[in-house]
Image (cartoon, rainbow, N blue to C red; front, side, top):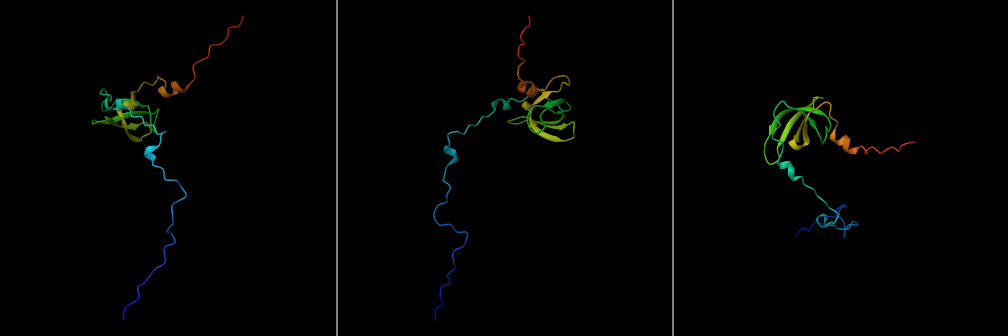
Length: 121
């Protein structure tokens, strides 16, 4: 006697037909813009271990730090330790020599230029 073939019901997660969301290929979108900073490959050769620097961009932007190591490669990077004790690896072009009296470059760019005041007679 032959055994009857066992059939199972379809799973509840099965979907019939297409989903409600339209299938869009993200590679074909017109509004995508990518900018690559090609100057990052040049780096800053003047950075050495022990130099005091200011981080210009990223997580600890504006903080002073000390260079712990410099790593060469396609995009030169440096391992820095902030004054708060945190470490971060960052591109060398995102570091500037530390000057305590110098204003932050990003703060100067975000401030509006001073408006000329009218003279009173």
